[in-house]
Length: 413
Image (tube, rainbow, N blue to C red; front, top):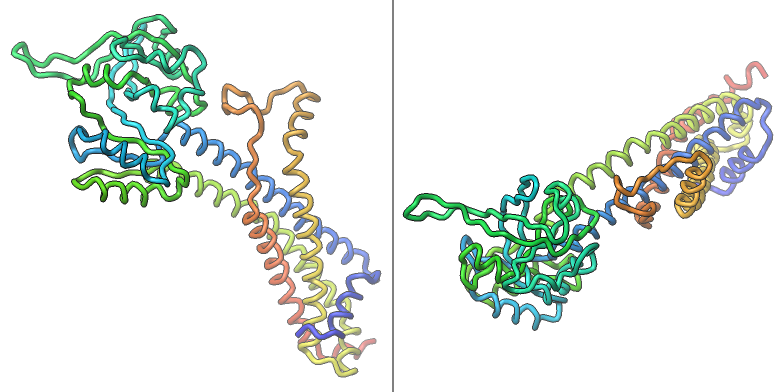
């Protein structure tokens, strides 16, 4: 279809000064509309991917890549499970844990998830030790009945380091009736992850203290695993269970947080579709300019037909010319998108200094800078969509040009 002569004519139409300047203006508007759409879409998806990566990294800093737990009861053979896991080359760390729900009472009452850990093993599976803002994780020694709270949880309870917190877990049946299991803990530290589900709802105690409080002996809820490749979490956990034998429950980070990741993915997809409408507007502008160009070039088309150019060749002329407009707009948009993305944080800082405003407050977004994750696949997809839209916009005007009858077009020339 794209023979040298049609391609040469299409390039000439693109470079030549047209008699109708309005057509040239619409063509330039098409180029800039496509470029702006591509630029905005690249930058927006890069920022959204950055926020998703930030959320995922902060969440995985506290959540195990995979967990192996007993099916409906406490896990008693956890030392063997830890040893088997640590012997696996795919496992970076393993540690036992106990999870339970409790009511915490300080100056105010607040429900929370209580996680019991072994402090010296916790660094193998989470970043809790590095998230401490007051105190140290090593203060959670057996028998001390110390507790570490998330920063927002401590604020809601109205307590600080050195204050007491009463932890009420469950009711125990006694001859006197149902009596709640409760214990007074001393706040020894406060952590801040920057992820509200943990800062607002998590308290951490020593494993042996939790076992005494819950009266579960040496049992634990399960074993948490950190892997070198978190995408293989489910497979690695299942392999370890097969080595252990027996019935266990296996879960991984993606299944435990599936709804959140689906929501983030859906949000990114919908924003991408909505912003693609900007590119679509550029494609419609290109279609209009091509229709007007075909009308303006009726005589030229008729002469080319009389010189032997086939209808298919005529169609190729305008496909080449319109597609090149789309390619130019897409290239400009990709370059502009990359430049804007890499300099976006500097631009935001300049706006903040110029107008004296804070566009991203740290107490709202929990970030000190603008997270950006520019993915090559997103750039390629956006560029491909833009060029496909531009190509499709040229087909109808090119088809109309190919149907031009030479005699009719030259009748009034």
